[in-house]
Image (tube, rainbow, N blue to C red; front, top):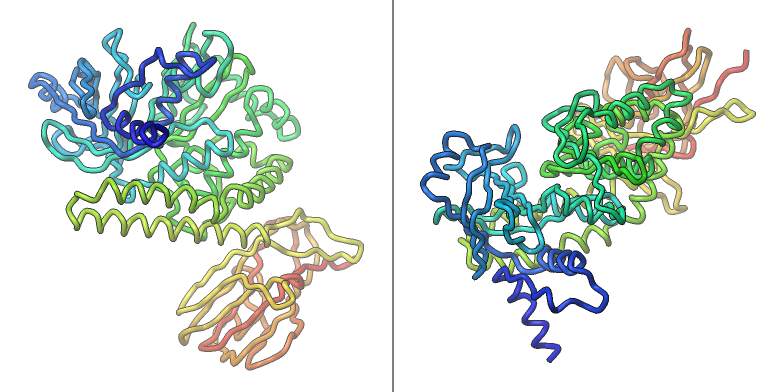
Length: 536
């Protein structure tokens, strides 16, 4: 009997049937049962959505894809009539109805429409910017595991008027059903849900998707005023209108996933919800289809989103953000967690793609393999960045301060720049020239007050052949944009090197640990990299 029940569930999901509401689990409400049905759908087999447009609807979408029209949607043996359909997408992903369009389906229109797997609104993304169809699934799982409200996603096949459009990514819509699941207030009151639009920020009157009462953007103005407060009071004032803890996590995951097109870095692809019960805003990620492009991206890549930018100017928030990145990189963005998200999804896709053309299968799984490699490389690189992250500018009683936050920067030639672990478990910066004319190094920066300083480190080399260069020769230390006279070459044991410099005024200084060589390698002892402030 248990085996029969196990086999029946995938069948129910495949044909699109909604389980009988009379068969509720003990103590389960109708809403809870529907949500369970939805969760089972997202975890179940990959199904096909067959969309049929009557002639009038097709002509209308050809003339204006954004104007919703009625259609029939078939999922297995389940037929949904009068489903509202329109073309969706922004720059880069929008395609016409005669191409492979991204679509929004609303099963709640007309009034009384039947929900599809417990969903009234869902999106079918053409994923033209993510050939692996995996970015949304990976990032969404990370956000939800970290407690950030995020739409669930799965893959589906799509047919439009008998045209096989192939594999799409299906996402649940941002509507009242989504809000009530993540923000159960115990009442029917729902706050304002705003659409961030295309590269728009909170200093603009964003479109309200859901909400009651006057649409006067008064809550948005409160958030704007809070992040515009003086630095000394900014964090405290913002915490009254924004869930700071969740926003810190939101920014950290955008950094970990290298989401260059999200809110924090590009003021794009987000929703913003004001919870009327707690009185605070929550940022919701959206449009996550261009991730993990650069595994070596800095963990503080520079923020363009107004809220992220203004809060990063507050020392307390910045240090809390770095601590959150460190915690998430250990507990969430680990190889074990990431493979547990990716590998089951790949197995499910292999089953679903078995009857697809071989060339299509090869393209998909080649793309997935590339994403998997870059995701795991990103995790490894973040681990290195966390170990060497910059510390606050704080000199000890000897006037010394260790320097962290070193980022690899191969400049010319064929060089290697990596963080390594020595036999005694200490860390080092390893540089190697694999071809003549190689310049490779690590860089970091600090803002220092006026005065005289010494940059120092211990370095050892192996068969390092120096390259004649105005900036310096062999292995050494210098400031960004300047030259150096210190150098180590040949094969040496640990040797101390220093570079003295003077600052006439307070400014940010870039430090460089490098090799300029035709062959060989060098190691900088990470624990010895420090600056010393001269006593006056």
